[in-house]
Image (cartoon, rainbow, N blue to C red; front, side):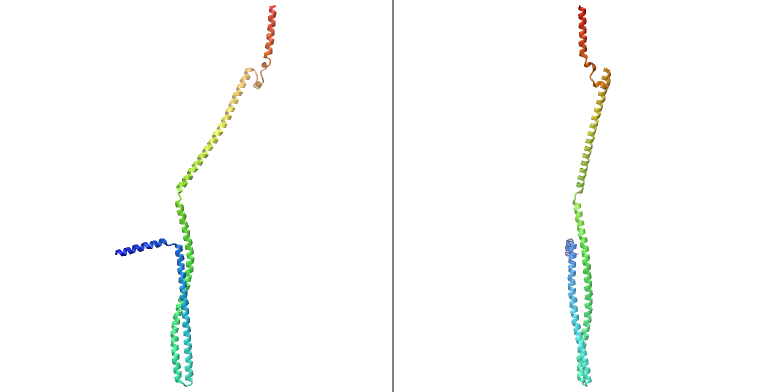
Length: 255
């Protein structure tokens, strides 16, 4: 393989690759339908021209056939009148028109076949265009869905899910830590309150026991501990009486 052949192949390969990458399915399908529509228009024009040619050939055939029939009748008329020369001339004219009509009949048959073929092709192309439009819409919908899916995957792929999930995990740990701290504070607060009540109850028991001991020493019951002692109100007058009696005794002795 020569250098130029290899270079040509490389260039064509690169061009094909660029064209393949540049092809947008939606645009290509739209253009394909447009091209088919243009072909349909041209085919309809061709069918119309073929039909028009067929009509003209048919008219010419009918005209020459009628002329041939006319000169046939004239030849019979001249021969019946005994004018063989005129009859011969009429037959010559008849043959000329008959030959032309025969050639036109061949053309007409060929044109009729062409027109029928063009009509079948026209119907087939119209059916293909209708099918292509339906398929185009389906392929466009699939292409759009594929593009949306691709964009979604690219968006998801661009998201740093590891860092996002790490943030969620850190926040979850932090919330759990706060909940644990709140629970511990509540438990500590409850224990302190219980301890305070337990201390009060313990102090109350000591006080009751101390009161009982005081009552035993004073000979009073614990219930009477709240009353003032009996001697507290009369101790001072008794001392004055005793002092007065002692003074009186001393005076008698001195006498």
